[in-house]
Length: 163
Image 1 (spheres, rainbow, N blue to C red):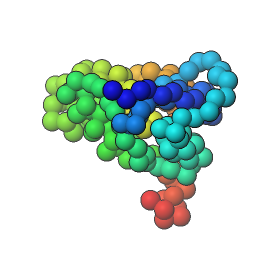
Image 2 (image 1 turned 60 degrees about the vertical axis):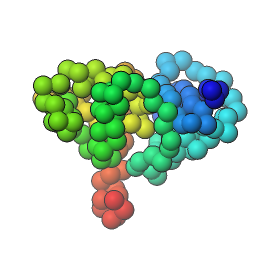
Image 3 (image 1 turned 120 degrees about the horizontal axis):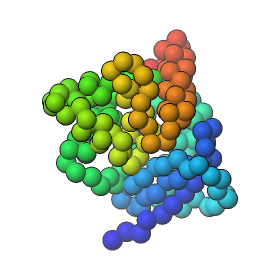
């Protein structure tokens, strides 16, 4: 069994705790308190660097190994979340349709809310059918910030032909 490492990143929307091992990233959670700077374990350096690039508008997707634990249904939803393009949103209903189970909207919402690696697996890109921002473990202010951040850089990249 590989040991779990922990790192912290100070982001524009608060501190982030990342955990993982040589197998991959296990969790990414927002913290509502400050953290003292600590050395980043070798196993998490690539992840922290990619997150920094993301927050600087230099990365639209992540190239990281993930070590996710969840039910088959949760893993199916999380894998589908990876297909939602940077700078865009879809509804919970759209997500249920994409996994082939339109009756599972509530279950899709539950799986989305249990996503252990927010940002990397972009659960923030899922919105309510009425276009409202709903249900984000990191808080709706952070969800709004992430969507506005992505939209701004997606528009820039579209204008300059980078996407």
